[in-house]
Amino acid sequence: MNYAVHWFRRDLRLEDNHALYEAIESGLKVKCIFILDTNILSQLTENDKRVPFIYNRLEEIQNELKSIGSDLWVYVGKPLEILQKLTEDENLKMVFTNRDYEPYAQKRDKAVYELLEDNDISFKGFKDQVIFDKDEILTQNGTPYTVYSPYMRKWKATLELDQVNYLQEFKIELNKENFLTSNQPTFPTLEFIGFKETELPDLPLNLKNAEIKDYDEVRDIPSLDATTKIGTALRFGTFSIREAVKYAIKENETFLNELIWREFFMQILYHFPKVQNHAFRDKYEGIAWRNNEEDFKLWCEGKTGYPLVDAGMRELNATGFMHNRVRMITASFLVKDLLIDWRWGEAYFGQKLMDFDLSSNNGNWQWAAGTGTDAAPYFRIFNPASQQKKFDPDFKYIQKWVPEFGTEDYPNEIVDHKEARERCLTAYKKAISKFEI
Ligand SMILES: Cc1cc2nc3c(=O)[nH]c(=O)nc-3n(C[C@H](O)[C@H](O)[C@H](O)COP(=O)(O)OP(=O)(O)OC[C@H]3O[C@@H](n4cnc5c(N)ncnc54)[C@H](O)[C@@H]3O)c2cc1C
Image (cartoon, rainbow, N blue to C red; front, side, top):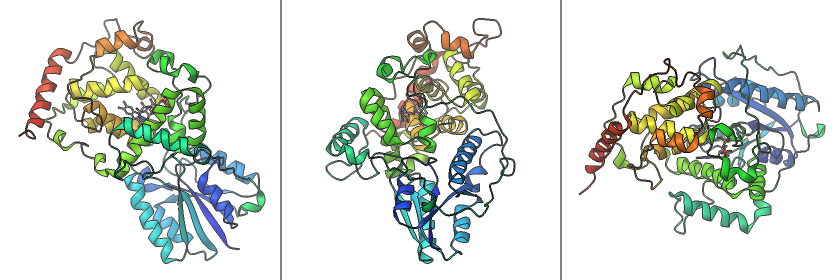
């Protein structure tokens, strides 16, 4: 019997899933698959918490599909090789998937497209992880936006034009007739793929608890734990962005603006893939970083002697999450006070964050370093002490993560902020002076 494949990637849900919806609409029976991509897995450590997160979610999806007599086919290997194998079954007629805009994914999907085309199988990609695709929000000249505010205004104006359509739910009928019957596929154990069972951090979708109505007032205070923690769910697609945006429109505009930041950085990465390894603005490429490895280690471990920086790093190491305000402070401290290449910090966050997303991580690190799209001048340098007075005045967040703060066991400051600030300004000035006539 002819059938179609739905290939899950960053869309790990059976509700409001665009490509899955289209696969069912095709009228073919649908076989749901997921590929544990060894190109990616081989770069992770066995304690990585994101793999068990994905794994648990796959089990949930599998159970739901089993309840209607179907299944989730989970493969381990390189996507191209797995798909090559699947094409050997001549009943496979179409492959549906939701688009992914990262450079690795783009390259992979191009190769998959060619492979499937050679085998007369059509490969259909759909917009699902964003409200607006890479080319839907462009300037009047048809070029991508490189500044957030006009992008955000155009984003909102475009949504206004046809909100019902853009936010439409893709209702999935979990109906036996729509899916391929199971023939006992393999579902590798976590151990088999080289990862350890681990207690997953408490990262609920916190929309209700976060009292989104007051989001703009409370979001900057780390001790309140008042943000939504929706990042991981959006990263892996366990929650639909359309649902999140509907909620934001109803409840809080600042929250909506944050969701637009996410799409802004996605389209920056898509249109300017060089940012993955380089400064968005070339003139910041030549900074003479100190890159002191001992300082970097102390920063990673949360032992810099600056309590808010240390609290943030320890929260990250313990939970895979760090509050946004503290992400900004820790990033600024690494780049500006320690004069360590932003790419080192970006990579460390990339290993640790549950909600790690290449585009947002890169965009925000470049923002902190002053090398990115934002017009904020590089000489605006966070003072960690004043940030603490403003955002953790009662030391509540600090006490939670750095219990020895204020005792003899707490380390001295590894740099003097005032001197470090001057050192940073000199290094930046020197680098960009080469570009001045
Ligand atoms: C140095 C640095 C690195 C970062 N790395 C990542 C990352 O890898 N992945 C990631 O999703 N976010 C990243 N952020 C952005 C932001 O810190 C997180 O999205 C946010 O803290 C996640 O927690 P939340 O879901 O409770 O956020 P909320 O405040 O509840 O915001 C809701 C959602 O809006 C989006 N959002 C909020 N702020 C931003 C922002 N500044 N840029 C882009 N999207 C945003 C996210 O999808 C977030 O989940 C980074 C920020 C900094 C300063």
